[in-house]
Length: 260
Length: 294
Image (tube, rainbow over all chains, first blue to last red; front, top):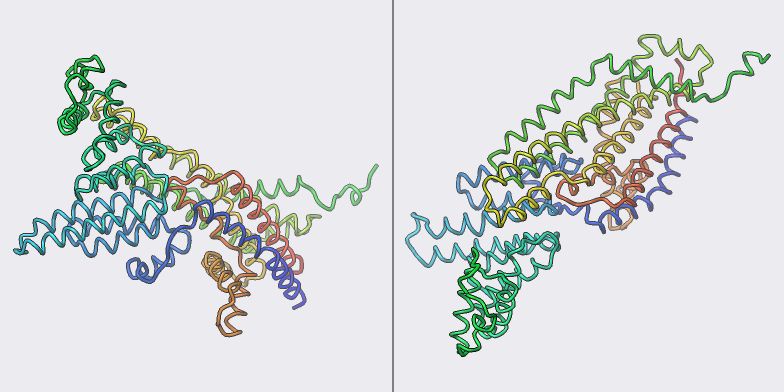
């Protein structure tokens, strides 16, 4: 009994000393971006009791992968509601994984939204459009939530730009998202250009966009889209032929044309 | 000429090393490394199973499965080897032969534990190499495929994205922290085995301690935050926070697999804290073992 008493006193004494140290280490890890998972009862419903314990027991990423595979099966069966719940759980378990946010957005904003638009069982066009818009919003929300956890992700900003540009018809927001993407580490070479392309579509920003496109042209980035937009803006801004960038830059617009 | 008793030192690194070496050899003879086949199947299988996914998903799943499996197997290996240490020596009567010689019980415990640490180090090293090898192989395949199918003007960007998704140096600190956690768990198992009545009891209690260790952070925060719980609940939660180690501190591999890097300061702090846990639990194990009737 005496031995047990000594062990317990040492254990408790060490416990009193270690508790604040553990707490500060935990806080430091959280500040450095670790332990970002969000636990809630909805997730427990998706992963089950054992999965929840496994996730808490240090196998969070593995549980997220199992749910991801299940999400793949739900996608193949076009069970969009179930897919959304599974994607919610996956992204809550692994919020630092950019690829999960990106794919969750793809499934909702592209697969589910397009499926809703072409739903053969729904004959009311208004209902179809409404469902499509809702899926687009869910896809957008996945990206915005993903950016809260991964603010330095060039990929998520690029996807947001694509979504606003190609699916939601909002060139102002698309331009902003591409411009953010271009500032992030590991950004694709084309996103800065895409920001200008989108800016050219925003009413009231034509002059600014024209100046930026002229700069691209002068730097030798004579892509088909750059030339097409320059011509379009010159016509819209009624720029005299003598002041056209194609004259002043002293170059043949067709020469060195690149892919968009 | 010195007498035999004066030549005998109270603590001898040589004796501890001999015991550790012997334990390592003994465990290797038990063919415990066969589990590596299972690990290889799991990692290679997961890399084949995910070929239908995009390459980024493939790498993500491969890293999650690889690191998760290293974590699981290293813990299980440490648990089973340590739980069997003392009972097996008692059964074989080896323990009596060793302790009949002038070998202090602390040296015996330390030597045995170091032997287990070496086994876990070898296992984690081998699993790490296998995992990184499969990852590198898959990366080369994806790079070759990308180079073949991507237009030249987009190739540099595409290859960069593939490389960013695959092997990253931050995986190495992740594996080191898995090892540190396995050592803490093995020492805890040793502590339990010094007062346990059977190996089954040791294994069961160790599994419970492992789960509690992962929930300890929640208990600690709840205890320190106060709240409106009854005094009995507060006492229980406080005991959990004080007695159990916080194993979640070693669980950073989930974020590492997602591309996050561990700072050197954090790595050292967590590893150092792990060492401290190990020393404390070893000393407590000695407190029980020194008085144990054999």
